[in-house]
Image (cartoon, rainbow, N blue to C red):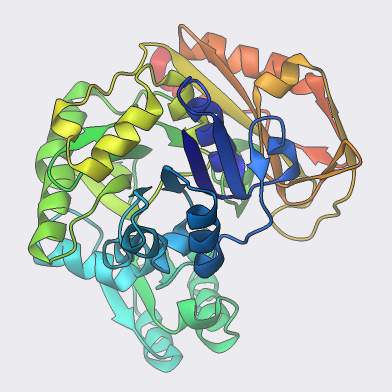
Length: 422
């Protein structure tokens, strides 16, 4: 069986490693993949946004199933295009992917269907947005409407910071068309939880919960990043809260998308804030999260391909989705200076054992050697029977990977462990 995975980061590497456990799969192609994946997949130099080339490759190579893992190709209609030529693909159609590709659409959806979220206002020009901020309650959150590589959200702790975020998006046009509209919303407080879920448009089967660490530096300081590490499960996400989320958020969202004529199939990511007034949605993603996937999939005991195909076929209700009772930790090793300016091109060395527990992201390969090629370079993963041991094991593994300019947070999992001990 031939599989094609579209994307090139740590998330895609985690998906590929999980798929490799299925013995029926003979070949896995990564489009474009990265140099650190070459031991697990055949990397093909086709960009994640090049839908036409992806379809051509899939047809010519008789691909049996495609996994569209990245947000951009989903928003651009990769699943639609592959389906048209008879190749089944994991992920939502373009109209359903708008739940992530447009913050305005997702916020209006939640408002219409009474799904709990932060209060918000939408603006299509900077003058009105800046005037609103003159009297708005601070802290406040400013979000670019469209996709912005995870960098379109500013949690502004001062009025000046909020106004700068508006100018950055709408006047400086740093995010291009994605910043032509913005959402300004109420600042929520409480523990954050990421819940990825499999859905076939009818039923929802949540994966194990996780906690991302967005800030660049220890103690949740520094700039927001794409994620400096994750742990799973998230101790703040109790069974009681899970039941509330299923009743008030998960199923209502799936049903709302059906009612809107945009049934969602694939992985729907719920970014939640557990406020004193109950769980509320911070954001939706239309795909696996990164780096949440790197701790969630190692805990999956069911066959990943079987589950993915069930979302496509509409048979998820009859398909077992089982996770272990253990825990996992991912420590992201980044280039010093990320997410601002950083140098790349440094050689990466790792032990043979490390190749099994690292998921590569910003990595290129040249003449059999690996070099840094991005801000988030790779993730070091560990699983164990409990979270304390998983965190300890992950940090013990970090020294097995080396490159000049390496930086990583030293406190991944600290908040979760404190919650468990409280």
